[in-house]
Length: 107
Image (cartoon, rainbow, N blue to C red):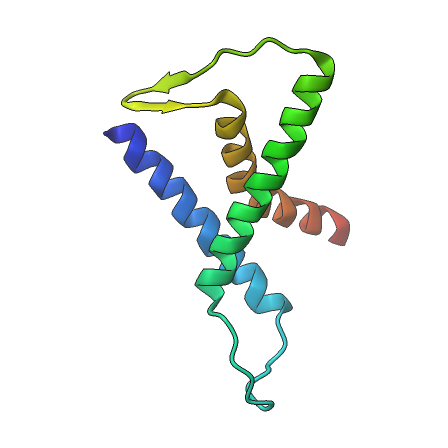
């Protein structure tokens, strides 16, 4: 139960960070009058897209290198595929790594 709450917390702060990044990048389209999606929906779609891209890349690499991975990993009450777990962790960490890289470039 604590693991599930921790994962949900990490995902929520990652989504919050993505929303902040979108607000800095996005132009004000309200003058045009076009409908657009909310920052929350954009951040969630981005999180899922990034995790999916990382997962596909990891599967291709593991298949190419013929790496033997366990079928499932068990974390508390959750059962996940190892590459899916790694891809979700990397996608959650991505906006913070981007912030570190941006800060490093300003130095």
